[in-house]
Amino acid sequence: MKSNILALSKNEEFKKLLKDKKKSNKYVTIFFGHLENKSIKKLNISFVAKKKIGNAVRRNKIKRQLRKIMNDAIKEISINLRYSYVVIAKSAMLNSEFKNIKETLIQEFKEIK
Image (cartoon, rainbow, N blue to C red):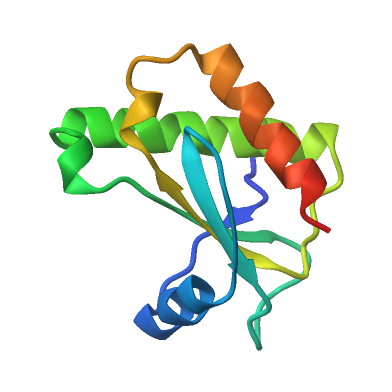
């Protein structure tokens, strides 16, 4: 299955997005904005789980969950592909159900226009 997600790769891209617009909830903080020279056919998004959340196994699990949610969200709702996104996970994701995280995250992306 081909993914519609394209990860950000350059440090400058992350720095620019962290200075742009921001939405936050109890599970994640989403930074978003326009980047030049980015494809508008794919979703430009990166997922970050800080070391204070836990060991590598926990951080990777959170990032896998976020990737799965976003692949499903692309099919369910219309996400603004002109924006690039950085999603920073919070430690509340560790003890929460996947369904609750998915509903909250999809609601946040519906609000971003």
